[in-house]
Length: 254
Image (cartoon, rainbow, N blue to C red; front, side, top):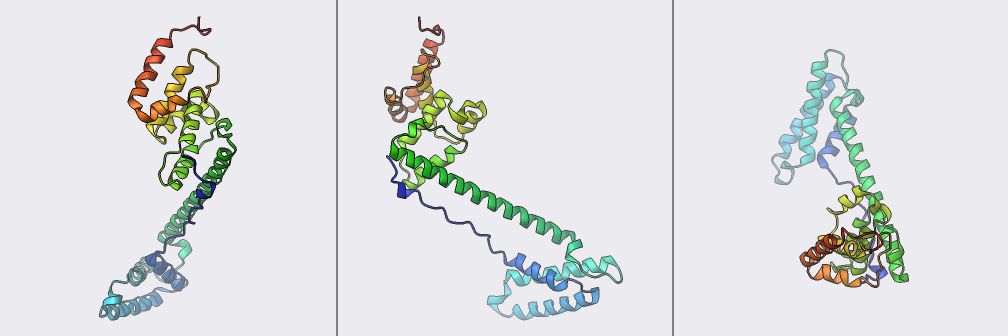
């Protein structure tokens, strides 16, 4: 089934999740900046008073931000007590605060990388869709990550198998075209593609084996894909049989 071009929809933009506890800790650190131990102790008492008041109200008693703020005031109070007389709070020298900022930065970088990868997959899906409409998909060179593109096209087709895309990948695997020339890429693809595609590829390779170096004829071997889809185990057995029968044939077929 060929997916209409408009079916390749944009993925929603991933937003940073809201963490009330992190917001509360950040607010406390900003307020505590430059405070002495006595000032922090006063702020801690105020936070404890607010917590006692909130505990009387069911809708406020379990507020994660309020709990985080109180815990952060307590931590900073202990930090300055251990630092000795004259110490003031500085988030820049607070190992806990610095570690949290580093973790936040790493998480933000990971989200940005995910967005870039999603955009790349969408752009490649649009490209393959255009080639399908032009009837030139079979001539395209596969690239790293096309397995994820296949998944995107299949999802947006309502789960229907994209027979032309699956056949294209099988022929590329059989002929070891594009990035599938690398054994590591073929090995990685085994965990990313359905078994029937590899069965299809194995059958194509076995059928083409008597003519080493020749390109697989997509039109003449279209039946291989139907066999692989109808009965993958039988197709795999046939591929193994053909390979065993032709493994000893001379290169010229004589």
